[in-house]
Amino acid sequence: MVLPRAEEVAPAALAPTGAFSNILLTALAPISWGTTYAVATEFLPPGHPLLVASLRSLPIGFLLIVGLRKLPRGIWWWRMLVLGGLNIGVFQALLFVAAYRLPGGVAATAGAIQPLLVVCFSWLILSEKPGRRSVLAAIAGFIGVGLLVLGPSARLDAVGLMAAIAGAVAMGLGTVLTKRWRPPVSLIVFTAWQLAIGGLLLLPIALMVEGPITELSKTNLWGFVYLGVIGTALAYALWFRGIQRLKTSSVAALGLLSPVVATLIGYLFLRQTLTPVQLVGVIVVLGSVLLGQQTRQSRSLH
Image 1 (cartoon, rainbow, N blue to C red):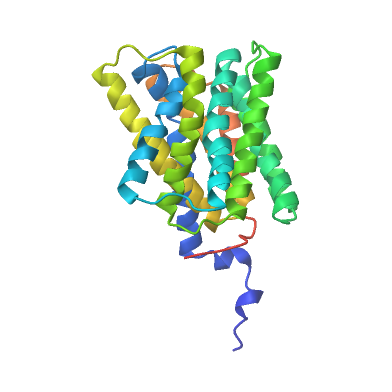
Image 2 (tube, helix red, strand yellow):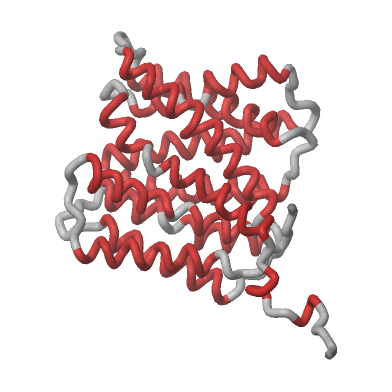
C-alpha cells in the first residue's frame, strides 16, 4: 500500500492542532471586544467616550512598560507611533465618534468593511494575492453584520459614517503593517508599546474635548479594570499574536465575531430583542468567519 505524500493530502485533513488553537486564541480578542458596549453602558461613567478609550489602554500599557523595563529603539520609535496610532489611538477615537453620531447598527455595518480592506491592503503591502474564498468571506461578513444590526429606522450621518469607515481603514492598515513589521521583542512588550503610545496620543484630545472625569464609583473602577486587563491588554496581545501566526485575511474575518457577541449579550442580559432577520445575520456572519479560516495559512507556527 502506497501512502500519499503530505503535500497531496487535502488541506482540511492537514489542519494541525496548532493552527486550530491559533484561531481559537485569536477569536478570543473580538469576543472580548464584543462585551465592550455592555461594559461601557452599564459600568462606566457616561459622557466621556474618548477619555474612556484612552484610559482603557494607557494605564495598563504604561504599567507593562515600567515592569518590563524595555523601550523602543531606533526605527521602532516611529513604527510604534504609526502602529499605536492606527490600532489604538486613531481607531478608538473614530470608533466613538461614529458610535455617538450613528445608531450602533450603522456604525457596526460600516466597520464590517474592515476584512475586505485587509484583503486589499495585504495584496498591496504584503503581496498576498487574495483568494476567492477570502473575498467571498469578507463580502458575506459585511452582509451578515448588516442583517444583524442595521434596522429600517437607521439614520445616516455623513460625519459619523465617514468616521466609521475611516476607523475601519485605520484598523485594517494597522493589522497589515503589524504583520509586515515583525517586532524584535516579545509579544507582551510589543503590545505594551502600542497600548501606551496609542492611549497617550488620544489623551490630550479627550481632555480638551470632554474634560476630566470628576467622580468614579467602585463599579466604574471595576469596569476600567476589566476593559484595561481583559478587553484591551489581553485582547490586543492575542490579536497581535494571531496576526503573526495566521493569514491577515483570516484574522480580519474573526473580527466579525465582535458584533455577534455584542448582539447576543444585549439579548441575554440587557433585555434587547432578537428578530428572525438578526438570527439570519448571526448565521451568515459565523459562516463567513468559518469560510475565512478555510484559506491556506501563509504561516503555520506551532
